[in-house]
Amino acid sequence: MASKIDDLSRLCIHTATTNPLSLEEAVAAYADAGVPYITVWEHHLKPLGAKKAAKLIQDAGLKVASLCRGGFFVAAGAQARQDAINHNRHLIDAAAELGAPVLVLVCGADPDVEMPVARQQIADGIHALDKHAQERGVKLAIEPLHPMYADTRSAINTLDQANNLVMALDSKYIGVAVDVYHLWWDPFLRAEIKRATGTIFAFHVCDWRVPTRDLLNDRALMGAGCIPVRQIREWVEDTGFDGPIEVEIFSEEEWGKDQGRWIKRIKTAYMKSV
Amino acid sequence: MASKIDDLSRLCIHTATTNPLSLEEAVAAYADAGVPYITVWEHHLKPLGAKKAAKLIQDAGLKVASLCRGGFFVAAGAQARQDAINHNRHLIDAAAELGAPVLVLVCGADPDVEMPVARQQIADGIHALDKHAQERGVKLAIEPLHPMYADTRSAINTLDQANNLVMALDSKYIGVAVDVYHLWWDPFLRAEIKRATGTIFAFHVCDWRVPTRDLLNDRALMGAGCIPVRQIREWVEDTGFDGPIEVEIFSEEEWGKDQGRWIKRIKTAYMKSV
Image (cartoon, rainbow over all chains, first blue to last red; front, side, top):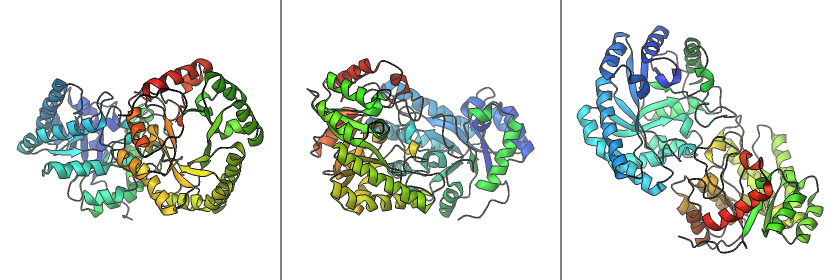
């Protein structure tokens, strides 16, 4: 088992984790708390724009881990699929301007598109972005999502599928995001993390609340659920991954409380349970 | 694609689908509606007992598809695991007395038991029941559950895992239950159904509501969600399966309405969308 983490040097918080805070408030709060990395969500970036956001973050001494989130390549109509690709090009530009080395992809799903078709649309969509991503120096991280999101969010639901896509698309700019929330249950997780060696572009942590009361926004703080977070971190680090460890927690319960105290609890849980 | 179903001869309803009805009420309602098969849930069986229930069902001209549900083999303590095995022995006896050819197994999971350990406890538990199941002539159907139930209900979350267990345990009395709700998202479902040829002991249908508002009791009627139910039925029937098609729908919304009209809607959806 991996040893305990002994400092905050790899800690990253997603702005969606402190969702009620504006980007300005989040940057100030993370910097105050000694959190070195930030992952910026699109809805938090929008009011300020990438250029101003980049300066704000740099001035505060923070580093950007990723921009969240592109993707959503699946649609019944050709125009909607092209619109999605165009929007992802803009997001790649925004990531480059923001100084985000990675754009995370939630690949998309649509109840009106059969799964094999959806998966082909995803492969086509990511392939269409590859050249632009290379030109802008932004890596694309395919994030497999929990199977409970296979209806409307992603038809890529296991790390096996994401790894297969990475191998098929064969680009140094296309890899995976490993999120313990989506993948912890998978009996082949250890093998698939090993197979992803060299192509893990992001690592997200949180926990699975028991019981989970909502499909979307009831994630738990690390250590407060049933996911073997440290075990999975060990597997990820065994591949050589030494990048930021990103705390991504969607929680209506926590969003309703004081966000400064929430960040303190995140830091404590990070040191104790990651 | 499989052709449409043209009669009700294979229709089965789970008593949990009409949960507010007692077993007596369910039997009368299914018989009135021309539903030939019933799958009995343990909490509906309990008030009457297996012997009286068997007579009631037989007198109404119904056939029993399965008894739901045994399993729950996972626990931190050895005594609790032994208690679970003993309880499953009683359930096998009850199934035999009821005339149920199959006992469905929800294998169990426990937030305090690591997944690899849980999976071994499940294998051990089912193996411990094999001889008794053979003696009583009751088949055991391992039902892989959706990964969103991996915390407390089942550490067997794909048909691949269930098939591997069936092969390892190597008994004519151990097979699988294929439930579209748990498995529809799996990119390897078709291959795994093929691999289960000859060992599919039960086939459950319902649909995945978009959006799903509750992790447990928000299943939809066939045709009212995004699962390709007919496609999956074709794959199951391609293996030679010609047993009952069991409608298992947990729905607080439907349970709150008139159950006679609900059964009518189930029959219509069965003919149209299965």
